[in-house]
Length: 272
Image 1 (cartoon, rainbow, N blue to C red):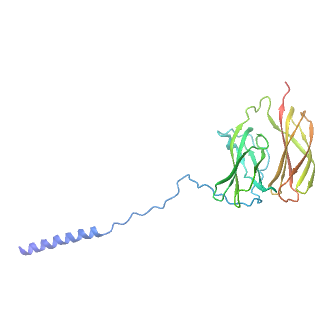
Image 2 (cartoon, one colour):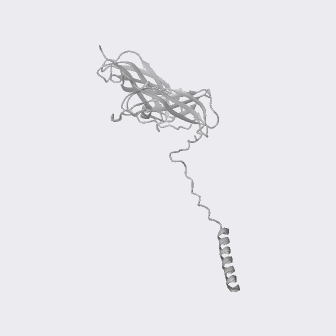
Image 3 (cartoon, one colour):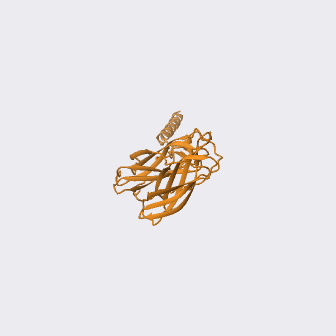
């Protein structure tokens, strides 16, 4: 009987030791999952500082695009905007030149562009609102724009621009609308950093054209915008008629000879 009691005691002790050993064994920790950024989240870009005289702009080639696009829900989506390049003036102000392009199939007006100078961390140091030189951006074409800042924002900054608003031209196809006009450059004279450009604007439409605006653009061989000037030409152009123009324009940079580009627009004036 004593033997059976001793055997039972040993069995009970074995069970107790096994249970304690299991309790003492550490539970393996759960494997930590590597965290990934939220889907769809893009960190805000950091503006790298640029030297005021270092070009940061490439002129968008001009030309028609296939008129197969339909107006997007937001007309701003139809606009391509190149970042401006900035030049320091003798008065230590800053002139920034850029290019805006209508990639859609209908004219856009009331285009407003916000131009800012950003710190290396992307914070705005100075901002202004500008409009393109051409008040109406015709399909497939563009226009230069200019922003002027009275003083330099500091030793490190970078230019940034975005289109805030664009509106479809309401009277497109009606009694009066903007059209491109043919231009011909006949003579270019260069004096230091200034140019004198002579040419003619030709009405290649079968209707009268009025409110003629001419833009003379100077750009480098690399497509960098060096300067532009807008000139309003009075009078009415008959179909096939031509009007001469003469424009003096200053150029930024130290190009030996920049490329001259002339653009013109006018309003159709249909006879009653």
